[in-house]
Amino acid sequence: MYATADGGTVVCAETQSADGDVSFNHGITDVWVAKLDDGGTLEWERSFGGTDGDYVSGVVQNSAGGYYVSGYTQSNDGDVAGNHGGVYDAWVFRLDVQGNLLWQRTMGGTDRDVFFGLTEDHDGGVICTGYSASVDGDLPGNNGGGDLWVVDLDSTGSLQWQDNYGHVSNDGARCITRSAGGGYLVAGSTYGPNGTDGGLWILGLDSVGSNAWETSIGGRGGEEAMDLIIDSNDDLVVTGWASGGDGDLSGNHGLADAWTVKLTLNYATLTGTAFMDGDSDGLQDVSEAGLVNYPVRNVASGLSYYTDQDGAFRVVAVDTGLATIAPLPAPYYSFAPSSHTAVFPTLTQQIDSLNHFAMQADGAFNDLGISLTPVGVFRHL
Image (cartoon, rainbow, N blue to C red; front, side, top):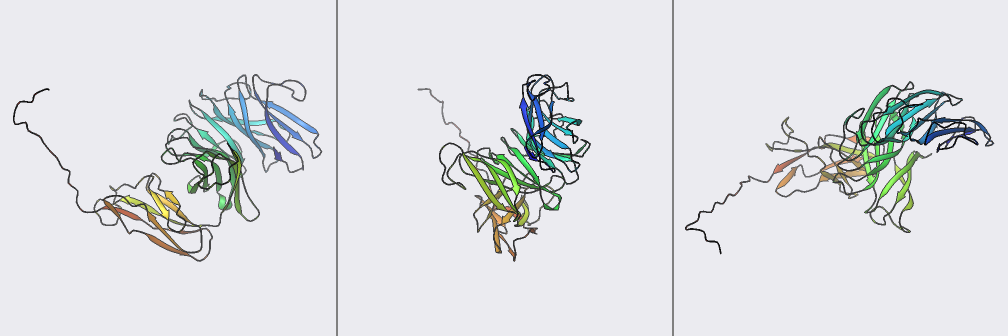
């Protein structure tokens, strides 16, 4: 459901009907979009789909007065074209002011790919988010299990950019919104770098999908974001569900509770790279790889942030003044330096960069080999 510029409402749902208020059905389940005026009177309704199952996740009005609709489909006929033959293809289409179909696009591969949320992008196109499990077709790759997936299309349906984000297990998103500076905020869920630390997952992306920052919030139960807004104080409010009562949660009433989280978008960060310094010179040479999924901790808050596939990290400063970061200690190794400190007089979107950590061996290591030589004939007892 979305409030329209004329004071009315546009709603979307799934339907198997072809009577009453529903004028047509293509087969099995259709996507149904209906426009109501400010008094709730039906102005128009349309069904979209093919002869298989078609499912909807959201609708928004665009700046031209029409609508973008997202979901997923198993069809490859009727209103649907270009299905890749997997379990589901992600599906997005554009309608004009009267609900007539202007264009549609399916995206995916030979596995399960869906769009769960959408918003108009900064240029009048549409940006969708969801879940991808494919490693072929339109997908650029997969990080393990299912990935959180973001796709940006222009107003004609042409691909602007896409990327998938995730760890070794299942990750996905339900909602996305525009942020300041041409970027986007995405929220969903993750099982973390080791595949067992689940949590509500929030990503800040720039205008072309580069991951500017990310954070996960939760406990030992399951958590997932379902919607997000930026409020009048420019803070991020995320709503969803949570089933735990530890970690970042308290007061669970049993099974899964509704859960609302508020985060400030006024933050500062310390960035850098953690790498294996083989020659112990404090500089990252071409042959020296970054440490992947290695924790770097904000000493004051106790929160850890993990390095990416190149060893890069972003640690958020949650208070003004001194902010100190340090990597987690490792047996037989030390980091040079052992910590970095920055000073932030105000909490705005400041970045203190070049906070690199070189992992160096504590002395030389020798493998111990032992050989046994029998002095007589072995006997079997």
